[in-house]
Image 1 (cartoon, rainbow, N blue to C red):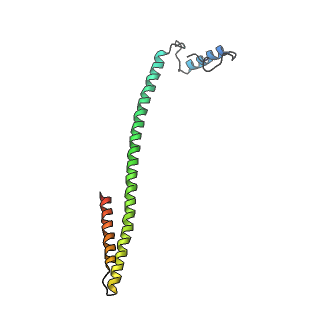
Image 2: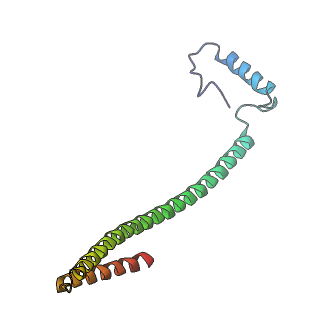
Length: 138
């Protein structure tokens, strides 16, 4: 753990005394053992590396879980959007059925039979509504 190599360029004056003061401070705070010399912290580095690898494995598992949940939510959202579109189509079909019903009732109020075109439009609207409802239920 030589501090002057990565942190202090060799041109900085008093690098050795600064390194010694930092080492004394680390020892005082209990972060560095007094007999531990820079460069001999192999066991400590192995522990840190093992801990990092453990955390990376946990993060990879979490990422995989999050990815799976995101895909599931995306699938559910698309399904819900499809259902909403079908519900909108049912509302339109309901309006067409009601319009056909009104035309047939208006014809009957006028004491005439509904025309073939009016009947066909009403049946077509009913059949379309039924097929949409089957899609929505299925």
